[in-house]
Amino acid sequence: MSLEFFPPTKEELEQIIEGLKARLEEKVIEFSIDGKNLFLPSVPVISVQEILMTYLQGRFEISIDDRYIWGWDVLTSIAKNDGFDTFTDFSLYYKSKMNSDGVYSGKIIHWTKLKY
Image (cartoon, rainbow, N blue to C red; front, top):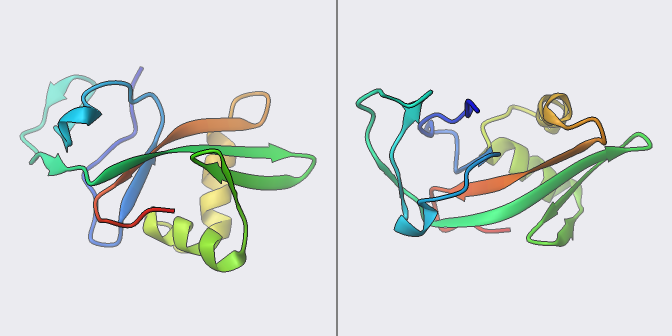
């Protein structure tokens, strides 16, 4: 599986990815794409949270660490912290990544002390 996972930009306080299983306990991520070392710097991981996004019956919903997330301010901050300009852009992107049941499950990799 190929991960869409790149070093964080200045705008990103976190990055949401799927398919990451191991090496997070080391608290450092070494970047590579398709197994090729790109000589990118290792980045310290401050914390990791589980995220579940669903799109069912016309509703886009988010749970983080088994807690339902609601409130426009929180939802827009999640989108902006993941590097998106708007929550609409964020939801459209992740809807396109959902499985046939309308579910996306992944991890939030935090580069700062921010947690939800």
